[in-house]
Length: 311
Image (cartoon, rainbow, N blue to C red; front, top):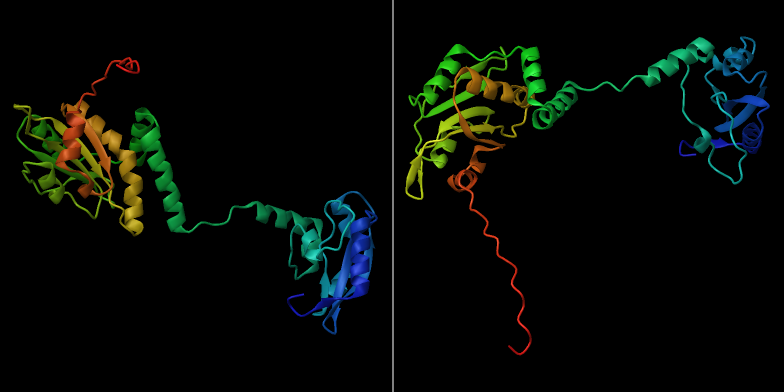
């Protein structure tokens, strides 16, 4: 054994007897001279595990357990097949229980142990938050819009009035950009006070935070094939920033995204041409946005019969 304590031949013999016969309920062991030695094979008095525990009487086991030199194998809870080849004893143990009092080896003691082992391992606050982030992102990406709006109301995250006014102003042509954030303390959607007037996507990305998530509405005035257009675009950016505060943000923003879009279109009356979702603002370029707004039509070529050889 790795501990330096070896098993005596008598112990190996009695342990194999325990494994090979359902007539025995357990095996008591003690340690003497750095050797594990058998004390007693416990006869099985019933097919019921709780009833067999009565064989651990105050006149036997508890008195032995009270000494520092005593150890006991876990009582048999299920039948074991007969050993067909030499194997380490530990390979036959389904679980290891450390008991310090006789009360822990009673039916009530085992019921408490079983109830405890059924409990999930406690999660850290960060693990709980990461789990909530994954669920929120899945619901935001795969769930229905109706459910997302319901979740947003459940979290009670209202859009501030000045943010609504700014979105309406954008729809009326009075603004070029509206950037929103969620206040992690109040869980309100707030307007970013800066009001840049970018003339390109590259200029816009310079104004969007690369530290915190943002909802950005942008009126993109541009020329394409000689024609000018000014579609309103929506950008959801969520930088992969470390820290507990970022974890909470990554949970709140996916939940609130569709609710913000619903408020913008239904309450503020704006029409969105395209919606974009990326992690880093730098992922947005004029080329990628224009490709989404004006996709190149794929020209399908008709089938051309191959020429005959020699022609």
